[in-house]
Image (tube, rainbow, N blue to C red; front, side, top):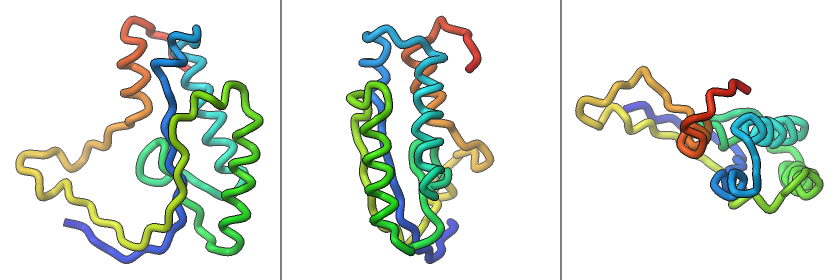
Length: 128
């Protein structure tokens, strides 16, 4: 088990992929939407963290200002109603518990975003 102290401010979000599909979004457009959010977060210092929709910022300087900048920026993207969840929190400890799971493959990290898109668009082989 890996464990270490860390001080990071984190933004986590989730999209309503089912709603996006019902609204006529294609697999490629959903992927592009995720990329738009990633670019917005990166613009204000939030870089990819451990999963596709969890981003952290390296500096704690003016972090709440950065969070508000992200919020105001996301309010202006197309169809912001598809953002189901947008949470900010401070993380101070990181523990990787996968080694405690018997038989678990420790070398494989699932990309939850790609899995979510594939689940909603199983027959769409468009590569974004």
